[in-house]
Length: 171
Image 1 (cartoon, rainbow, N blue to C red):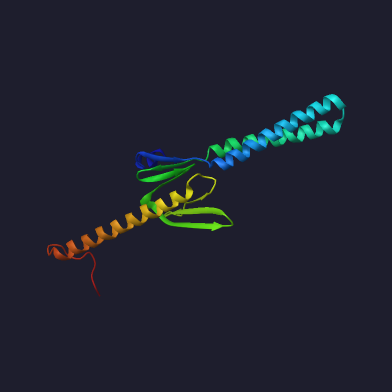
Image 2: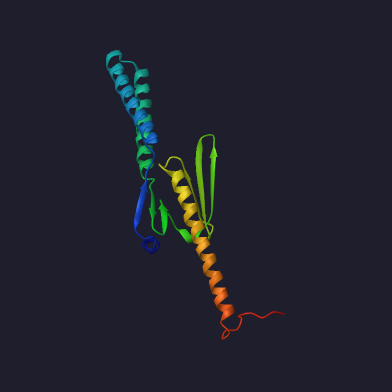
């Protein structure tokens, strides 16, 4: 894994979670904490068990929201000179076999498949994922065009050089 990261080159950009998703989590966390405090005041004033149950429910919502927020902040897409990394998935531009993008019901997803079958699905929770998908398509298409030109040149050089014999025979 570390060997692959060193081959990726210099870090060019970092794409973090879109601000809209962080704001939603922050609003839910703040509101659930306010309702938790209000229900605790209700427990103190009214001495009723129902307020305690409501306070417990709001506290659980708050805890799960904060845990989800922390896990969401770990999702970082790093773009390097020669490839990209997302969580435990690293790929060089020339290792990518296909890229599929879909835009269903205002949800953008990008599925990237490496030549060895390993894949990752990136969605719109990552800020700037549409631009990244376009860049990947350009990088991979450009590398394929360069490889095709190099292979064509090699074949022409091979044909023009009479010293070499073909590595295969025609039957």
